Length: 322
Image (cartoon, rainbow, N blue to C red):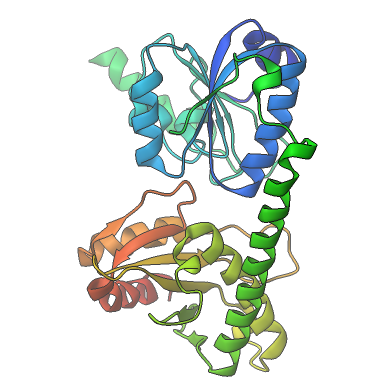
């Protein structure tokens, strides 16, 4: 269910409890986590923080800690799947979910006992009415980590102090290198015409041996590269139709295992309502071709795919989206 009063229905409730925070590895999640940590430290809320990068890590971490906690906070993960089906929690477990991934799973929306969604209801969520989803079912029934413990003294926690500035500077240098690699890779892709039209979408594949290709095997980096590559391509191409197409991008993940990371990006338009439909499309394409894929990322538009299955997977994706 949606939480209408964040203070009364969320913060006042967890303020007197010991809670477990599951935090995704993207920038939005980390920033939200820092804000929540600051509030918890001011109010002396005891918490344990567990970083997770995918569904497998989330399930494993939950199994390790579920006996110690009743209240769980998920930051930028958990809203777009049936959370109770994945975690199989005890009936007294309560999950507060703050997540920007869409669409929101309808089971989470209409579960009013264990799932509490910290999401603005004025967002265009397009949630079907309860009666449309569950009326028939009800009628039928009638007739038939690296953990960090926030409970430690605040002076022991890592802060942005003078003795930690070296970590800040190191992080800034790494961020600069990442942006430089992104810019250089975009220029290379455009100059060598690696962005091609597959009909209903654009496609770009980074080859093994490409500079910084290891960096772009990571979902966050590949998504960043894809967004900026699509924007640059739209600005540079004279093909009007291509300006309206989404982008699918692949990068080598593991040469030994023969896998690639693949991400789908919605079209670059002026509209703020850019829904990403690739999550479901990837799932259907994999099912119809028996392609070996791994859907382990909180962003459903990111998958891992066997390299030798890529051709038939893309053919199925073209058919689905045509």
